[in-house]
Length: 354
Picture (cartoon, rainbow, N blue to C red):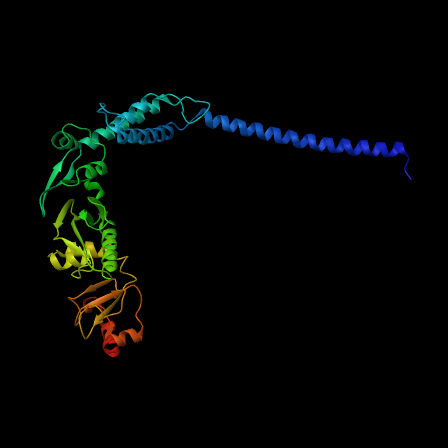
């Protein structure tokens, strides 16, 4: 058995080894923390001036937008953009850092010049103004923001297209032609609460939304009066198609697309534009031909999403699901595909099926 002195020596040796190991680990952690702090300081010492200015401008814009809406800037005719830009001019250090590192003044000056240039070009570029001077009459004009401020806003300050269209929705719709890259709908007004007045919406979205409203309304009495126009970009210009009022759910049309195709004599290029816009939505739609009677209440299964009475024997009807064989037999319907779009082999298959 070990004596007391030997045990104490062993304990001391073990403790010394343990302390040495701990000290070594602590030194390594300290060195690592020191290097990390140097990296952090390096990042803080050189802030991304452009990123800081963009964020500060965006925050300031939101602040002045709220102030304008609250009426707290009465008497100040500066636009929100001008107020936000003035705020940016006033800062020389990073406002988002507790250390307040200095910004790169050369980069700040370049940023301000580019922003001023952008705001100037915004006022100088041409926009499209739709002037509704009658129940179903639209006059198209090319205008600049300065014209808008002088002739319509009585020398007021233009803030944004959305604000203008909301403020003057009974008389005008202002459009940025650079944003109309695909078929687009201008919903002038609607009795349906699901549709916003004077809204500018991509055609595929507007068609789907109104088609959904029509489908729901078919299950109820009445309909929602709606007026809209269609914008079609073509060869650097925008064609405007004025439509008769569409009554969502009255049974005449299953969608805006259905109305446009039947009421308007579209050019082949315009037809192609609309088909391309809806191509993705049409992938999962199943069409069936009415062989005994036209589409009417109780003559086809419930839940159809579209119909076209100009095709097939008594029209065709679409579903977002496949109908069962029992349903097809009960309602005297069959699968339909436009013969113009069929290959020779597909036509032969249809003949054999019949």
